[in-house]
Amino acid sequence: MKILIADYIYTQKGFISKQAVAFTETVKEINTLEILKEKYPNAELIQTEPNSILYPGFINTHVHLEFSANKTSLKYGSFMSWLDTVIEHRDDLMGACDNTLMQKACKEMLSSGITTFGAISSFGNELEVCEETPQRVVFFNELIGSNAMYADMLYGDFMERVKASQNCTKASRVTPAIAIHSPYSVHPIILQKAVNVAKQEKLPLCAHFLESQAEREWLSSGTGDFEAFFKKYFNTSTPVTNIEEFMHAFDSYPTHFTHCVQATPKELDYLAKKGHSIAHCPRSNRYLGCGRLQIEALKLPFTVATDGLSSNDSLSIFDELRATLMLHNDIPIQALATSLLKSVTSDAAKVLNLNCGEVAVGKLADFAVITLPETPKREEEIALWSILHTKEVSHLFIEGEKYV
Image 1 (spheres, rainbow, N blue to C red):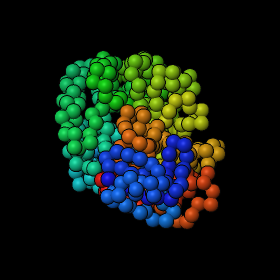
Image 2 (image 1 turned 180 degrees about the vertical axis):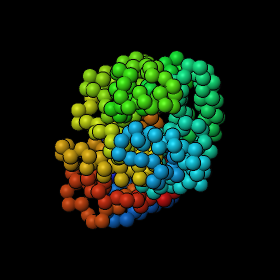
Image 3 (image 1 turned 60 degrees about the vertical axis):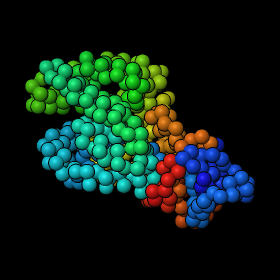
Image 4 (image 1 turned 135 degrees about the vertical axis):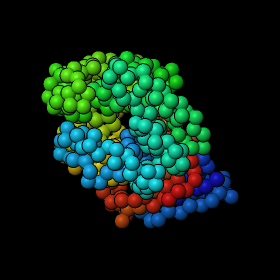
């Protein structure tokens, strides 16, 4: 048994003070230090620094580790120029992205308080790293392939990767999951088969959707920048699906859609009615010139996520939260800070169906402690100061074990 003492504890009811947390692998009790010491006299006492705040471990629902070698290889500014350079430099970037580099990316996330992340995997190369990292990993095996001629082969490879992630040991904290690359890159037949697998096996499901204006034009009319792209690389001039057909494929199973920057209010309302959610990646959207997701108008839950280093400059969740504060400048900053912290804790845990994301009795003892530079003068501003002043966490626990 351990007892952690902090100046404030972040809970679903707000920040509470003059309380401590008793925990093993899970949270056992939240009470005053005096009561907890009396009930658990042999517990290890963990005293944090002055001006400390105990948060649940932060959750990054959407990250690609496979392109962690990118620094200046890929062109930012517009989605299509970025995609052209992905194809141009893909082999070099994949070759340079060994286990050591991906482990470094995991440690970067750990230092910013990320105790859980959703790894989007196109080839399964990072599974070994995800088994070894201390974090909880929802391993999204990604399905890609729009050519009907190769659909069976690609689906077979995809299922082999799914099975490999299902065979991970419990100690690795890996949860198998399924990802759909995008509506323009997955044939509807194998898409439906993959969704059925997610339903039957009760696996988390995600999909990239309407990230760019080019994607929207291609799916709507078979025109725009994607027309030349598909002719050049795939010798086709016809989309394999459209926006409505793609959305309907997920009607019966909750899905975490990524980006949705170019979705209309009507389409977003439809996703909300079907119980879906969105992974919002603001820096990635800005760097690739995709636009801004209007989170102030959303009627469905959203999480804030970093995406990968193919379209970002760091995997720090606090870097991402600060960028989100700046991007959504029309939302009152205190209210936005509060909702953003919720988006990377309890809301993210619900989306991924995990027993964490809250400091509450019965929840897994995944904690991140941050330390403010001085005592906050107003409790209602703690959320904002936490985002603005945190580069790295002071302490980090996963299932009660300390890693930072």
